[in-house]
Image (cartoon, rainbow, N blue to C red; front, side, top):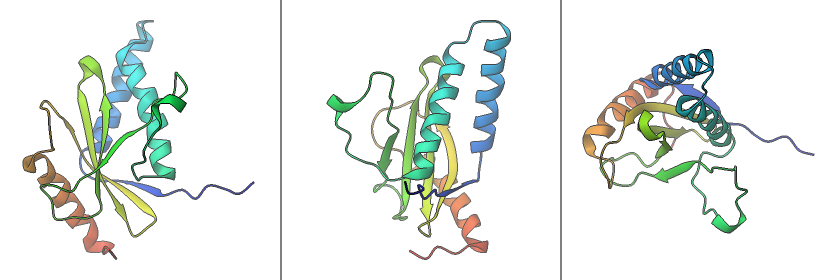
Amino acid sequence: MSELKKFKVVYEGNVEKFEEQILINSAQEIRKGKPQLWCKLADEYARQLTIISINPYPENVDQNKLIDDETPPSIKYISENTSYKNFYRWGLRGGRTGNHRIIYATHNYHKVILLYHFDKRYNGLIKRNDLIPAELNYKEYCIDDPNLY
């Protein structure tokens, strides 16, 4: 059996703080003996991050073939409001924890750069104001590791 090629996951911007928030709040739920929304979000985040590290590109998922407890990552290519051609958004529905979005870039065919997390409190396309921090973080990252695309 061949090994899966994994993309290296790199953290920029505020994504590590979001992970810390998930861990702190889920640990509190566990201490209280009531694992609920944050623990569910932590499980989904970890599962989907693993999937993204193997294949960070959106796929057409046949909803009829999904196993009941399998939640595919909600990944969409970002073609509006940015000039970068390698930006994607990863959506996590957290219920009362928030409607989380992480903007990431595929970089030089072997890295996934997690650029910016925000709580999307509106419907429709991601707004330009939510992409600016991701673009600035990516521009800063590319100073030391230029984009080959």
